[in-house]
Length: 425
Image (tube, rainbow, N blue to C red; front, side, top):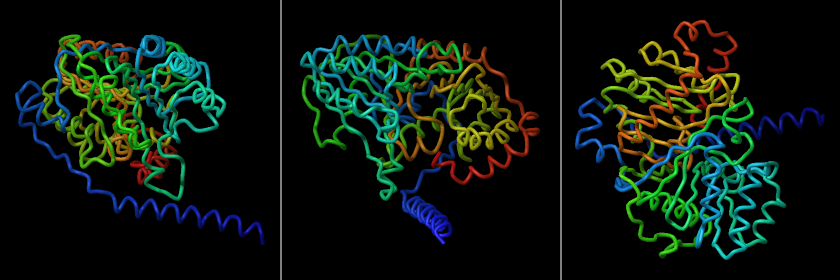
């Protein structure tokens, strides 16, 4: 009898949970449909006000492209070590290991020297089995203000499903970092083995840092109700370079997805090339149509994704692979990065408009998570992004329409099974 009751209980719980998710999705705000014609180009005056959902484009910035753990972590740790007043840090993944410990110690050292250190971690991305409670206690005892975004409460469906996927570090309100990096050993090294992932981050100096600070302020205030105001958070920032940039946050609480809008408008505006590198690439009908339409008007459209072998979320890769067919049939070129897990979230359009950030090219990032991207309008930085993409292409194999047509039945079944849940992956 007990053997019957337990399975029935499990089935009932799963059914109830599925029903709750379904009801929550039906009650969610209506998502806009991006059916956009190619009526202007990236260099036209109307492009930026059309693409950017609100945050102003600031001039006088210096953007430094950082790649892989060996290139990303030292500048971040150096910035923390130089902090005089404030360190504001938020991340999705922060683990107790060789990488997390370095940042733990850096936060503790600054807090003990009187610097205000605030750390905001996602409760699902940085769970107790990965982040030791002793490390959390150690930071708090040293004076680090550490909080978790949306604790795991399965009976609160939207709270559980609404994650903070942003990566932000702002030091003294003057220098900032963002991108796709996680603070765990998978991001160590230089993408030199399957254990060390390929990643891209950007260091921001200049007025655009204020956008990163506002994004942190938004999430921190939601959790703590503490307003972050004053010169220690928003000092006067003189020009640091010549790049124009906008920090675009995305949130399910906003009326429109910031990242999705900019992606859609810039794809529709492209005249020469669209090069996308994304770890979890699950386009929907609208974005597939935009990419195929760009290819039909002569745009060079290329997408780099992880291989099945190295993808850390096989269900997500399967959901994305279902869309490879329509893209490949439309002439879009798909590439798989061979050496290790490919984790960047980047795009460059016509060599002048580019982005580095936390948002994946999927519905979860566009409509479920808190995300953040830096969009840069600068031919010099765009050139660096193109070189980075070309370096990655050298480590890729092209995935062809023939390969997609001949994929095993097991992969087709998996794609069919996960397709209904693609917005939650």
